[in-house]
Image (tube, rainbow, N blue to C red; front, side):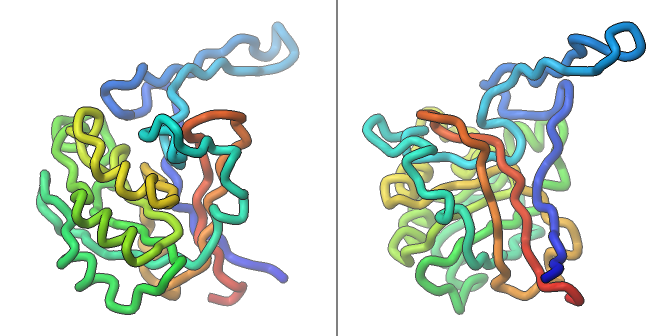
Amino acid sequence: MTMKLIDLSQPVYHDAPNCPVHPPVSSVLLRDHPEAGWRVELLTLSNHTGSHVDAPLHKIASGASLDDIPLSRFTGMARIADLRGIAANTGITPDMLEEKLPELERDEIVLLCTGWGEKRAKTQEWLYESPYLTPDGAKWLAEAEVRGVGIDHYSIGGITDPVNPATHTALLAAGIWIVEELRFPPEAFAAPNPCQLMCLPINLKGHTGAFCRPVLVLPSGR
C-alpha cells in the first residue's frame, strides 16, 4: 500500500540553531572528491539537537534509557494542538490544552504547534523567548495518559528548564516520551486530526535521547 509522508523534522547542518547551553553544531568534511575518491563528514553535536526524542533518563536519574523503550511506543495516533499566534514567553496551560484538544483520547500523542518551528534561527526570540508547556499543563497531559508529547522548539519546558525541569519531569516520570524541535508545514493542518505519527529514534544504547525523523503517515490519495 502506498502512503504519503508529511515531514515534521528540522534539518541539521553546520552551525544550525540549537539549544544555547549545548555545543555548537559542527559538520566538517573529512574526505572529499576528487582527491580522496569519496566524501564523508564529521558531525559534532549533542544528541538532543534538531528533531529528537527524550527518554526518562534525560531528567530522572533512575529513569529508562532510550533503548529501554519499545520501538513501537514511538508510533501512534497524534493530535495537533494548533497554538499558532501564542505570544512569546507564554505558558501552555491546562485550560488551553482542554480548549485545543476536546476529543483527546488515552494513549494518543499530542503535538504542540506554537509556530516557533518557523522562527528557528539564532535570534533572541527563538533562543530565549519561546512559548512552553507549564508544569500544570504537563500534569494535565500525564493524567490524560497520553503516549508522547511534542513541541516545535528545542525545550518543551522553556529556557528555564535546565534549572527548573518540572515540565520534563512530569511527563517523563509518567512514562511519556517527548519529541522536540518539530516543524509543521501547511499540509500538516490539512491532514486528519488525529493522524498516524512515526517518530523513530536512531538506536543509541544507554542514551537519554536521540535524533529522529518524525513524520505523519497518510494513506495515498489524501
